[in-house]
Image 1: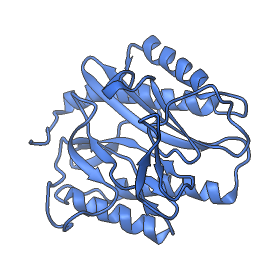
Image 2: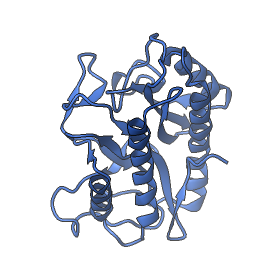
Image 3: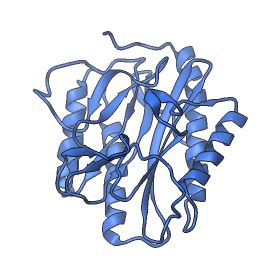
Amino acid sequence: MAIPLRKKSEIEEIKKPAQVVAKALDLARSMAKVGATGLEIDKAVEDFIVKNGGRPSFKGLYGFPNSVCVSVNEVIIHGIPNDIPFKEGDVVGFDIGVEMNGWYGDAAITVGIGEISEKDQELIDVSRDTLYKMIDSIKVGMRFKQLSKIAEDYIISRGYVPLRDYSGHGIGRKPHEEPQILNYVEGKPNQGDKIKNGMVFCLEPMICQESGESATLEDGWGVVSVDGKRGTHYEHQIAIVDNKPVILTQGE
């Protein structure tokens, strides 16, 4: 299936839900304190999205029960929010999606609760730094697999490994569109789809400590590494405008 190429006017429409996502993530970050719960943040974010004219696009997507993926400690992505209070030293990921007027926005952050260890701060930094390394490396005409190789090489150079079986993705009229953008290389980097002006996609490095092999929790949603150690996740939504990457989910 061809990857859509969006007009500037369409990208302006896509930016609207993306900006609500950015502000919703700021809200989640501000609430992420010792004693807060994922369910409290989920409710506050859902109310914020609706108040701003959007719809929480994750709620009901593929059967997901909530508006925000809240992934605590060993859960790297797709965590279901619950009523267990956050503790000092926890590491929590928030992934938020918004739909407005048939267009979709999506981004994620990982934050520390209170004082966290140097190791956990480094783990957060690697996922965020990998994301910006990928964005800074984007050039029109390069292949997405080349971007995947840049991500993998950088993650490994920092002493970590990418989570396997999950990826970034195209986004626009659907929450998940082509292409699939892995954080590691399958096949040859000089093959596959090229990045073109007008494309809109999400990059989302997911970082593991020892093993990139993934497993799913009994709830059918939360994804962990088989090493049982903490992982982190960062995501931005990118549009290629005038042959350059523009971060749609950057806070203004």
